[in-house]
Length: 291
Image 1 (spheres, one colour):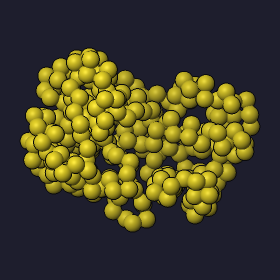
Image 2 (cartoon, rainbow, N blue to C red; image 1 turned 180 degrees about the vertical axis):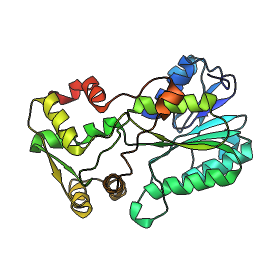
Image 3 (cartoon, rainbow, N blue to C red; image 1 turned 90 degrees about the horizontal axis):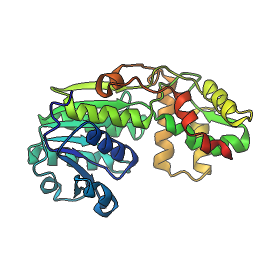
């Protein structure tokens, strides 16, 4: 169902992995007025050659409302920046000023304002800004990407250990492609205002992740449980920026409280496909296990 396929549909962050996939999905599903927003339009020249309107969209630009002129429905892809609450509030205010009729926003599981949850609070304040704008909205609370498992692969292969602070609780890992298809589907068909969890088909524990990695690499990888402080210390020692370390630790802490074990049918509802299981996503990336 693509009843809004002939409207002006903007995807922000279209130069990123999720945004690019969402644009491709919109085109595949017959959208005729796709706008790709990016801070660097030259990087999307290939999309422009295919009829996509490419616009410079910078959430730190004071003239953002002008850049959104004529947009009817907007996919607001969450940024990764220390000031993203300010960035995304500015994007919502600009959308209201420009007359955008519907915002689809990529949020996170159980966003809340608690200082202890780090960057997850940014999603809470963005959701609040969207709800307070008077614009119809679809909040997509994307659970952790299945591809995120690959981020720790090099260290796991080198040490034979997979570190986490999830207290043995599961995560309903969802592929980036499933998130992109879901976001595009919501942009094409969602009405009114609603909030959805976007998840994979079943929760998977870190012990099970270690077993999957062991099977795919042929090496023994063991899950090692840590406290949040221990995990944060290890990440900082490895050179991870504090903002990113705090965000990842907060995700583990939320998993430990069961917030990531939710399973919903949102992917099927908006994409028309069942979500991929973590094992299938990892199998598609076998080349990453060559090391």
